[in-house]
Length: 308
Image (cartoon, rainbow, N blue to C red):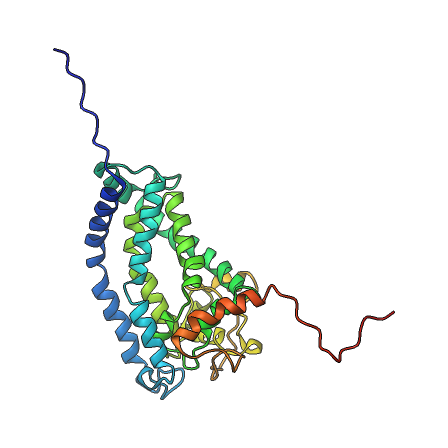
């Protein structure tokens, strides 16, 4: 009796989901501990007045710490990993990953034009590519329409490592999530991307830490705490400059670099005294303000009409 070759078993979408979650969890657990430890190191170093950008402004005395704490619980340290896992799942299912073998191949090699490159080359492309996209996404969020969502991050009046978690979900969705999805769709291996998540966490902690470090001439290559603190300052003092998350040469290249020699920023926050300071308000109010950006301002009753 003739025997036909056995067809590969096709897994259900939920099976693929569970396999991906299990595989990603194995990758994540080996990466997270040291990332947290190094982020804590930046906090310890900033306790020394000679190293602090704003001496005495330690994070536990931050008047906005309660709001930051809400973000730390709602958008915790694991969020970059969870976001990465979700992005990988979406792209995997959209790419036709239907079996356990497909999952293994997708996680280690990726799918797309960049998947044939060596992992080191993929890592370099991922770091530069995402930073380039996030630079422009950041500039777009400083525009009139999307600013209400990004203003949540800028609402911190004391900038420290806890500020790095103060982000509206819309900001995360249209920023980091969209850039990650683009890179995975282009073929960057999920294993490479997951391996670099600690780098993203450390970079966020580093640039927001209360340190007066500029890295000398390397300030034109890498974003530093002083570089990014000017970005959190008033609009006329760097608030519309220094958009790059990691590589400051994007700002130097596109004319948005701002680091005056021998000066340090002292004031932070948004130029809106009515902007909410509590977590719930910062989640809700930006949607209302976003809608208002598309509405024409009502003319004042006593304003003169158009010239005849």
